[in-house]
Length: 150
Image 1: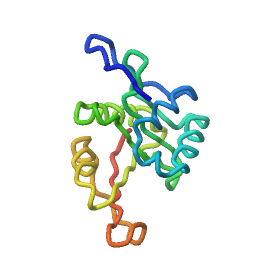
Image 2: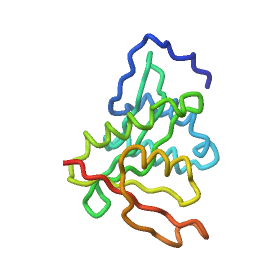
Image 3: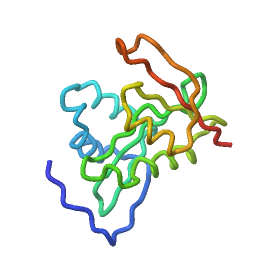
Image 4: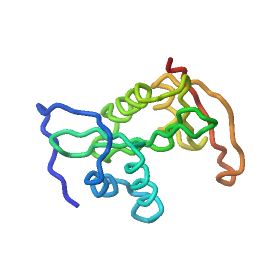
């Protein structure tokens, strides 16, 4: 799906995702094109009001999934930004919005040890290391981070 370039003078807005946003989100999520279960999970997150998007001129630039079922704490399970918007602050703004939307005193996020870009983003957003989960992906442990939000 082709989308027009964002207007630099248009305001950016972060809001809860709507069902009509899902095709655009799936359009720039490369993983989703090869894994249909991602689209199903995304649709469920939107229906359950657990998905936030950054939009500009009606174009979805990125999205984030936030639930509160990680040991009854807030957990960001996914942050995806359109390729042409990466490294422009979209993910940081989405993480800031997740902190505001978090209903608990702690917000958690995780990434694979090998994902250097995500680790840098998580550190820049002020998250602190919290633990490691082995055996999710062979040879690539999941690093857990947290940030107090209240």
